[in-house]
Length: 352
Ligand SMILES: NC(=O)c1ccc[n+]([C@@H]2O[C@H](COP(=O)([O-])OP(=O)(O)OC[C@H]3O[C@@H](n4cnc5c(N)ncnc54)[C@H](O)[C@@H]3O)[C@@H](O)[C@H]2O)c1
Image 1 (tube, helix red, strand yellow):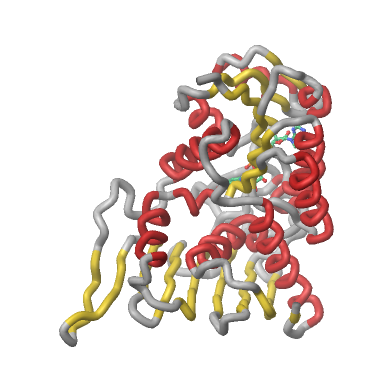
Image 2: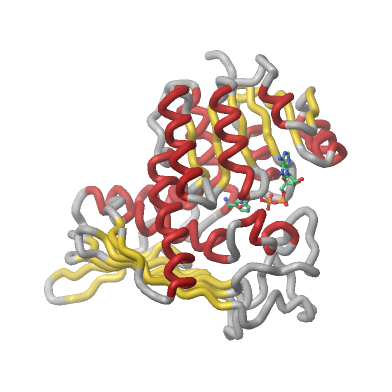
């Protein structure tokens, strides 16, 4: 089988798991790296054996020896780089959030249709083994109709700084960065129902708490805490056409006792927690059962989920698999995220 020739655009913090996962896929040849900062691109090209280094993504896309790209740049550049890549004949794996703007998301959807190239959205939580197993149970009807989901990622200290805290480049704070993951995971497990309305609140009460010492957290490659124009907490209630609802809250900073990450879904025949543990809840012979499916990684394991995500992208690009997280899903999630910000600004529910 011929190898997929891959390039990575954006060689900052998250690119490391992309590089490591491509390096472990026998059907991939890593050929080029691009970053605005040449030394950063070169250091990764040297480490992972990619021969070519670029600082302008348009030059990289003009290279006919590249079949596919991972886009790991600032959020506000995802759509522009993705469309250029598709038009240059490359398959695309674009990091989340796919877009920070609904109109731009729709332009990207058009570009996918026009070019016929594959675009996979980096909704990495869909690719964990626990999500895959739970989806099988749900699809088999074991949980019945799912009518409620509830998800939180509450960081008490975890604003990654740099561009993440600059709303112009990130599109928003914890909602855009981590809310996107859990909203998508719940929506996907609920069967991707059509969204009909959202009510959201965002707060800028605590700033980034850069005064706090003695606790480590994920940081952008160009970490800088001096600028912060994003919210530090967001919550939302999302309603779907089938009557189901999803409640979410996410924070970069909050006076919480401990950081927490929980994702739960509830159906007529059973429920499930997929983070922090993997538990399926049911009832038999008048007794409630908490069942613990045995998988290698019962919680969310970053390396495992990314390896699965990258392997799936490679298979799709080689024509061996159907996409699990296509552009249409990216559009629907963009609609939800933008609706939550709009609701927060206007102070009322947004109906679609
Ligand atoms: N899936 C996940 O769990 C996950 C986790 C972290 C970050 N991300 C996403 O990955 C993306 C990157 O995040 P990060 O933490 O690596 O940020 P980062 O700041 O560490 O790295 C971003 C890199 O992109 C480069 N860059 C920006 N614009 C560019 C352009 N036009 N051309 C070439 N290079 C450019 C920057 O110089 C920087 O090196 C973001 O969209 C973020 O939301 C996803």
